[in-house]
Amino acid sequence: MQLGLTCTACHSNADSSCAFQKYVNYELQEDYLSLLRFITTELTRGYFLEHNEAKYTERRERVYTCLRIPKELEKLMIFGFFLCLDAFLYVFTLLPLRVILALLRLVTVPCCGLSGSRLLQPAQVCDVLKGFIMVLCYSMMSYVDYAMMYHLIRGQSVIKLYIIYNMLEVADRLFSSFGQDILDALYWTATEPKEKKRAHIGVIPHFFMAVLYVFLHAILIMIQATTLNVAFNSHNKSLLTIMMSNNFVEIKGSVFKKFEKNNLFQMSNSDIKERFTNYILLLIVCLRNMEQFSWNPDHLWVLFPDVFMVIASESAVDVVKHAFITKFNDISADVYGEYRASLAFDLVSSRQKNAYTDYSDSVSRRMGFIPLPLALLLIRVVTSSVKIQGSLSFMCVLLFYLGMITLKVLNSIVLLGTSCVFVKAANMEEKLSDPPPSAVSTADRGGIPLSSVTPPLSNMANSSTPTVPKSESDTFLTTPDDEDDVSKIINTDTGLEGDMRPKTPKKDLLEIDRFTICGNRIN
Image (cartoon, rainbow, N blue to C red):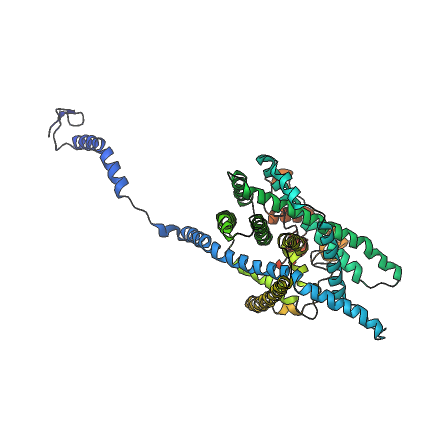
């Protein structure tokens, strides 16, 4: 095809045999077909995922981890729930029997003339103190009018009740933290060796402080249960909806923050304690409502949808929260197996001969769950809701008590066997024979002596070139984001090399309780 152009190279009419004309025709054809070729290329182009195999394998593992989180989390939650149930049933079943045995020993030992032996063992002293605390606090709780509290709270606005409920949750955590310290101080003050008899007087202020704490904490939980009861009985259920939505706000405050394994362990313990406490609060709400409707079983089905909605929302929030925390922080789902082994280790170690604490107290420290105030409130609600009259009623109460003892014993046997399996699978059997941890250990001071941290003066004097940064901008150009970066800067400033620099040891899971500071936050 001729375009009628003159070729400047050969000064003749351009035809198809001219090289220049062929180039022009090719360019025109390329411009004409550029859009078509682009669309064709977009439709037919390919890529190879195996060129970045590691990246896509990691992404797939993250998806698998998120899918495994609900199963592993619920295993931990169920195991922790039965641990809390075991400690909770202990207050109702074995603790009264142990108090009776301790009082019998207190009476019979002086009568038998055994002056050389101790009147009470340390564990029996703690049991007697717990029994006296429960009796005194129950007598004080009998003067609290639950009906007046209910109508007082019901008269408040919805927003005010929502704020009050959030404040009560924060106060409950603070009470649990300080309360366990109060009880531990009382137990140690009552059982520590004393040279003078006047030293026993110091138990009295600790005892009254513990009584005051248990009473105030029980009142706090009663207000929580009353607020939840008002939410259940509201006509439009607006307060209950707002209280449930508060659980989803918890996701925002937890998911987008850096978590380590110890922080996640604290959060898991907190979720176990919170879930068990909510179950007891729901039981109290159902008891109060059933009493108002003369124990009509039809009303129980009216309460069932709201109870199920509260439990389902709590479980869904926990699953979503833990799934995204493990995703964002690259934590494997197998870590929940380590958490179960740590909780199981507490149960198994409390059955050893060298045990230094009761199991219920170990659960209180590990999870922040203190059963005394919650058990006191449940006893107060049950005794006010259920009227016992006649010999048949007493017989039913006796059978119910025997049933609770049976449940406690069976639960303890199953938990102990399951815990032994978890401890053996985690290879933690050797730690059972370790002595109790002392108050001050080398691990708390970093595990290295001071002489290994501080270099000798002779070496510092002989060093001709001081090891200092070249300039501040060289070292502090950016803010260190990791502990390793901080340790490098400290190492550079102090002139320590290799393993000579002081290291901050990471706490083992067995050393982490509910209120241990791991890193820079308490969850």
